[in-house]
Length: 434
Image (cartoon, rainbow, N blue to C red; front, side):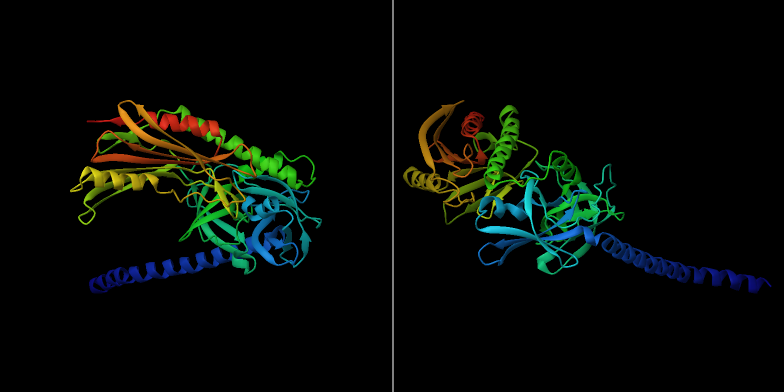
């Protein structure tokens, strides 16, 4: 009896890992089936509320762009991204738009309203509207399962499972971090919970399942301000685009101009550092014996550029510092190197000749807080959006003849007054540390 009792205990111990493995495997199978069923259910229950948004070249009907959208109001208003329909605003004679439903119906679209800052637009068709999606309100825990829906790469309506990871902490404009694959063509589609409530709108991806959504509260705000469903004329849309961009730059530039400018050490100078939470900064150093000088670089940039059109982005804040110190160069050769660096063009502003004028520059010698500069401030006007300018400030310290700092400040889509006010504050923040 004792022996049998001992054998039984041993059998229990040896069987326990097997039983744990069995139940774990069973749980995974059941969970996988449950997750699959939930994904199928979400798509089946809400697919009639989805559309593909197509931008067509007007004279030939050739497809020039594609995005996604969803019904968001009982009146038939459809939400998509601004960047999906931007061609209809910028070149209304060249392009027209239509929607395609999941059951194959096509209809011409009309632009009702948009929010360029948050990359949203409202469109409408003459199709009988299905019940609209409900916009979610309230908090969501990190890790909650979500579903992004759209038409990736024009391959048909697709649903992608992912997770909610909260708002980006350092973004100028609120965005939700979504761990899931949002691909080109899914822009403007909804990201929903299992009950179909819209948490956000697909807007962008950084690849590797790092994607971004516009929070649903901005859709709610856009819907709330629409009175009637009269389409925007091209002239009204262009004026609204300008007004929204001017108001937006006034808001974020006020934050930069009014806030204390933090500085950091670079060589023998204090230079502007991370000036706002929405800027990301990095640096590097190079000491190449063949060049016979040392170089240290520091850069800070916004990552919230606003899409205006295929040829233009705006809302850019960028600055960079370059510390150069001679190592074996005489002062004449160092000056030649220094001058060449100062004269180099900044290549980072995207705009076509149809968008902007040529830069007009003013060069002067400036002295502030013990620092002597050669400085050039260049402005170019936006032809289509009067009152907005791109600005590039370049400045080189002149305190020493064998080393110094060159700095470049870039502002895209700001008023001339804001460009000049901030450029002045920017230079005044430099200090020489002998």
